[in-house]
Image 1 (tube, rainbow, N blue to C red):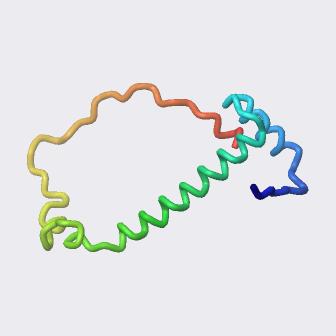
Image 2: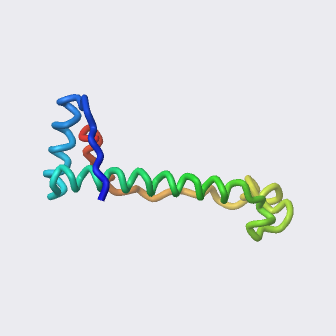
Length: 95
């Protein structure tokens, strides 16, 4: 299997990566692999989204002019959104 060497990593970044690995119960190497795999997967998703966006509504199965005829046409009682629960706190500062 190939090896990758990363030089001149800032100590603060290395410390955050080590902390993230510990929080996830992984070795530093396993955490770095996980981060790289997630980044590659996200890139694949972005590329597939671009392919979907390039399709016209008609190619996606909607009738011609559907969105132009229906967008903003609600005439009933105003829609209300119920109270939402607490949102999940994430440790973004570790990334």
